[in-house]
Structure formats: C-alpha cells, structure tokens
Image (cartoon, rainbow, N blue to C red; front, side, top):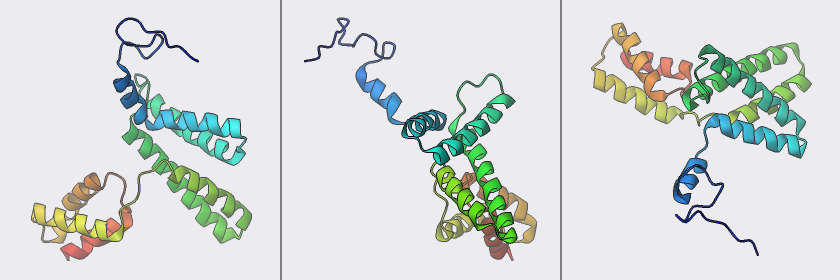
Length: 179
C-alpha cells in the first residue's frame, strides 16, 4: 500500500507549488501545443517510431525558430505555434506537388506520412459550407457590395477564420459574393 504524505493543508508534498489538486488537473488537462509536442517526442523516442520522431523534431525546430524572434518567450503561445506548423505543412504540400511532377512516388509517400503527423497538431479546417456561411455573414455585417470592398472583407474573413480556412477558397467565395 502506498501512503501519501500531506503538508497539513491537504496538499501532497512535491505537488505543483501551492495549488490544490483540482487546479493541478486543470493545468495538465489542456497542455500548450509546445508541451504536447515535447511529450509526443518523448513517446516517439521511447516507442522507436523514427518517422514520427523525425517529423516532431522538424516541428520542434519550427517552434524554436519562432521563439528566436522574441527571446523573452519561454513557451510559444498556441496561435504562434499553429502558424509555424501551418507554414511547415504548406512547405510539405509544395514538396509533394514537386515530387509528383518528377514522378518520385516513394518520396511523395514519405512526405504525405509526414504531413499526416503535422496535421495532428493543426486545428480542423473549415468546410466549404462553413466558409460560405462565414463569408456571407462578414459581407452582410460590413455592408459590402462591390469589388472595392474586397480587401476589407478578406481581412475580416481571414481574421475570423483564424488560419483554419483555405485562402484560395475564401478568396473565391468573397469575389463571388461581391460581384
């Protein structure tokens, strides 16, 4: 039997600072994306999953490059990490297209596997119906009616989509609704 030692206030010795256990659960329940990445790297290393480990190391390097821009950051906020991961995913998609043109199916398969792993860290993308509804709502709110309002509408649509929408699809939908 395992006995837990408390400090008189009901807190276990060695627990997180002076937070009660209920707060500790909240702290660990939703880890930051960077922390999740580090934990997944450890699991991949222990599990011997080389492809996953290599991909997670590349994502980690993207996080470190972002942190280098502002040295005062100790843990990269999730929106910044997501932006870095989306940028890396875009590079992978471009690589897939290039390798497909060259007919290198083995390399395409490797990069697609890497892209699936990166996708685990990205928020789900907006569907076409959700994108269409978002554009309709923004156009109605801003009272946009001509192509002169394209920039203003696109700026608001992209801000509300928070990186979850396909830029080309959103642009086509905005152009279609303004013309």
